[in-house]
Length: 333
Image 1: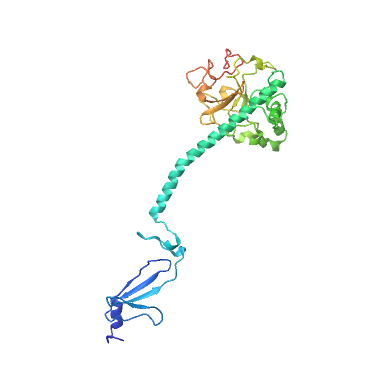
Image 2: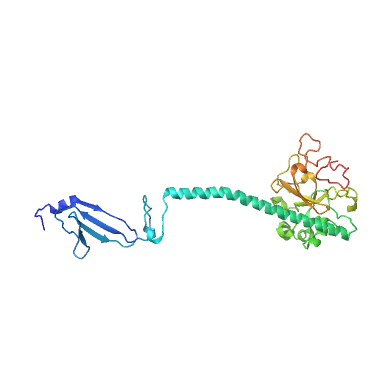
């Protein structure tokens, strides 16, 4: 051993300064610099090269096997990780920034998606009611312009009375190529199918409660003011303002939000202003006697003035909507 001191190894240990240079984490090197004037190579023979620097120090250079991406540390300041493989790890700040951006985009996109869904349902509802209006016109053509009955009994119509042919929910569906209510009512196991989209009886935005299986709930209904009480047959020829007189409209079902002044909805198959419902972004749909479809806000159909004697029913004198065949007849009386 050069230097002759018995404390040589200790001195080498005290004076040793190790620096590790990770220039490339995919095939890194370790460089051991020994500040020793004796310039002694400490690497075992054949185990690693020794390089003498210009300052007279001895540098041990040892290669490490490449690190896998799973073993790569987080990126340090100003340093790339796995640059040769095109892989970059995120710092905590960067990760939080990405999360914040995603949250911001979600806040912008989700309301737009909800509105698109609402518009889609409104369009489908308009199409459905338009076809119910066409079915009514075809029925009138085949029946000397006389309307079908609006119900079997006044108010809720139970499943067991839903088989009568002359009521609109059985007489009009053949014109649309769909089954009538009687096809669902006769078998208890089939009654739930009445609420499926394919039945064509319902607004796509209607919200049904558990009570819907106990009796048929109608989210579309026939205008209950067309048929004069006590008359079995009413002619469409009596309608003086068909462009403003509804044949069918959105009707509320149990559990849906009522308009100011209205009572609770019961889902009966006929209705007018007192059961008109707005399901489409504050709008409700009506198909008129001339075939046009109107989407109107609540205050154009229902009297929402709490000081009015007609509060919660139709607006009188009529404006946008005329419920009775004779516009001079008050439907609220």
